[in-house]
Length: 96
Image 1: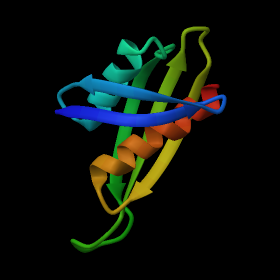
Image 2 (image 1 turned 180 degrees about the vertical axis):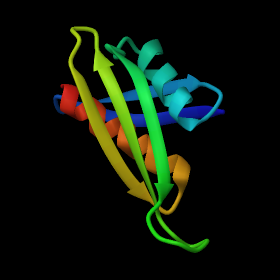
Image 3 (image 1 turned 90 degrees about the vertical axis):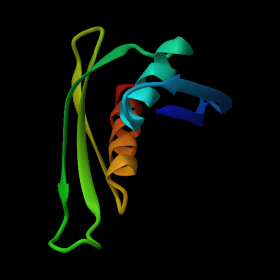
C-alpha cells in the first residue's frame, strides 16, 4: 500500500510518501524516507465505537521517541484505516 500526504511543520508544507503493508506502516515509512522519523511505533489498537456496521472506529497508537518518551495518540473515523492514521498524527504531534 502506498501513502502520499502533505504535512505542515513550523508553517512549512512537506510531502510524505511511503510504501508499506498497510496505511499506517506506509505513513511511518514516509516519515522515515523524509528524515522525520524520530520514533518507534510500539502499539496499535482499534475497535468499533458502537455496535453495527455503520459504527465509527477508534484507534490508539503508542509511539516511543528516540529519547525514551512514550505517548499515545487517538483517532476516530468511519474508516478503521483513517482512524489509525489520525491516531498516528495525534501521537506524533504530541512528541513535537
